[in-house]
Image (cartoon, rainbow, N blue to C red; front, side, top):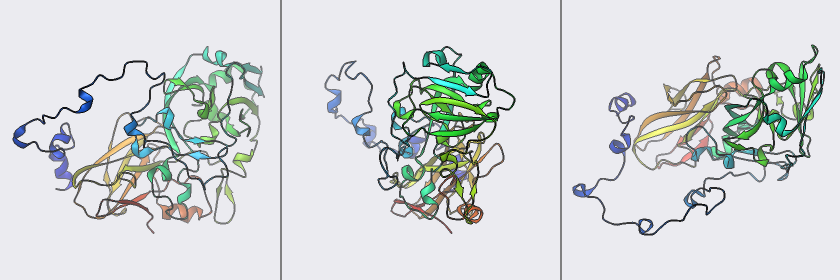
Length: 412
């Protein structure tokens, strides 16, 4: 059955599971066995002060790569994208990237200073920030190095490791423009130095145009206070830009008339080209996508009706569409986008697939409402060579083998 007939058959609609999967019952009888858990009382309320997942979901966890970074204090772990549904990342599974370990900040002592080329320098406490009109928005945060280990070839055999430096949450806080209006920006104030309270003193230059657009000072994530690893008690959020610019444990914003050229935007987080030069200020996370099922962690177990699913995102705006290829990019067909489709937010996509146990090279290709189309590896390497680490948003390939196993590969 081809995909068109698949769609006509109604298998993708309501009741698809009944028609496409399941175990047939002999003579339409219901199994008589009553499972053990149906014969005893369960635990009462308030057993745990903070709710925990089922022990049967213990495999759904963040993971790291020991050889990737120098020490645990300057390291990263990866979100298990292949095990998540929808677009929201639970707080306990949000990826982490630290430069000097997790700062343990006392919210009662923490302060945010805004100074420099302003009319009235001000210091804000957490309570001061919470007195402003709150705003809640959905955004992704992605490390600039997401996919960076793949520049020279397929290295890690797992969706979590190739693309797990991204998470998507609902953030609550105050618009940065509101605070900047409080201090008053002088005409020459065109740049902001954002500095964190961690031991690394992580800092980045933010263009004023972006700061006044959609940047936020946030104190809550997915309905609860930020966790320490995500910048408690407050962080800067710079939607659509590389994640390190969303400085955690934010303590200082200095307004200036030129970029600061900080360490993390000169010697680090720059895109090194073939000739040794580097692209400057490549902030935006361009349109990207990844198939999460099937993937090396989610192998094919059943022939016949299956659904390819994955995630797409763009720091330029909203995802407009995702195409799927089953033959390594020679032919493409559109996937179905699941609502909501929001700007600078993860978007879930689906594609019905009749798999008959044959080998396939599956890919996803995203494009956004700015007209940008996710590029191939060949195109990116032609433009930038092999010396880069950051901003790899190339079309990714999974090889589905006849036995159902899935492997990370790259096509010439």
